Length: 166
Length: 309
Image (cartoon, rainbow over all chains, first blue to last red; front, top):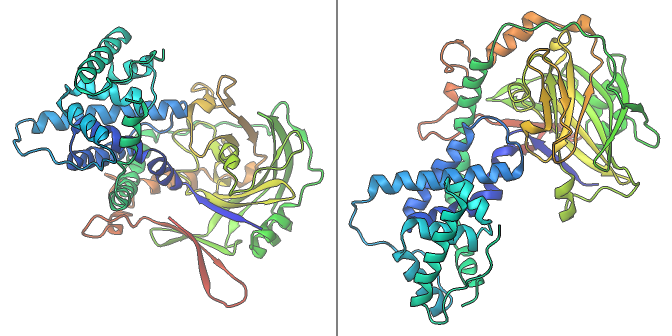
């Protein structure tokens, strides 16, 4: 007979287990640097503890984490934008295609990288991205279009330009 | 280029185990401070609600084919608590509500000091004065609940917590009451034995047991009336949300103790949230405000730790 025990501190374990990859990936895409991503990662989850208790829904919780990750990434970047050390490559690439994509992504403006990441990695709709970034949907579409166009010019075979989820 | 190239590449970027572990530790340390601070903000003169215990509308009495609460405690390896559920101080409720395809039965509750074989500690302090309740959860269509290792079980997880009238649910819930418990599935029925700090002290206010979907507390699950201090399930909530009124004996209420309890959560000195748990942190800031549960295995005479946060 299986028995499971639980305690209310499970909340912390659960939320970190569920969202650690999402927050880390977004922080990495946003900051381009593993060390910065780790700082943002910790900061986001520490802020999670002091948020108002309870979320209206799981979607609400996820949106909160995305929004705070982006905001903290912005703050971190603002504080360190003058550093001149070269960006480290912390990614592991399995194909040349991936390596090329990553190199070109790093050259994109931060807002373009972020919308590309939220759309293609986190599968957010344009509306959800707009809410997370505090931007109009039309603005998000413009950023996505421009980011795709830049990447498409540089990458062999272009960059997928699929129908946007609304 | 396939649209999945980017996703597959980024999916290999994962935080290190050390980073995750360190973050959890810091969060738990931070949480104890935040809880104390939020309680300090939330603490206010009591809204005394003299209540007549009426079971919630829609509640039916149905405990057919269910184990007794004492049997559940026995199955969960807690013979002392099993005896307590069979004793005179236990309150047999056996009230059921059906929602979201599940039938929830609040079977029985019992409160007291040192009535369990489980020993719960917080910051090394033994929490002996506890309230225990057994809840049975069944599929309304008669099919069995998913086994714990079945991925479908993720959709059958519920947050069970007492709520006290006069306090918003986000202000006082299982988190604040050092809640926890254990559960098992027998004959397709999920039995949950949950424990929190003794809530009979709040009996004059009125106490609910709330059940909502998920393993987290969601504020949207319930509607709180600030004027009356009463709660109700939120019909707009996307998930299960049910409330049971606990038929507590009002004569067991202890407003003074309740007030001290709330003040105690603010810290021993009651000033700035420091104090009671301050010594629980080492110089590296590692979190040591652990809630530890131990159970006497009844044979070896040793305490076996069965759950530790």
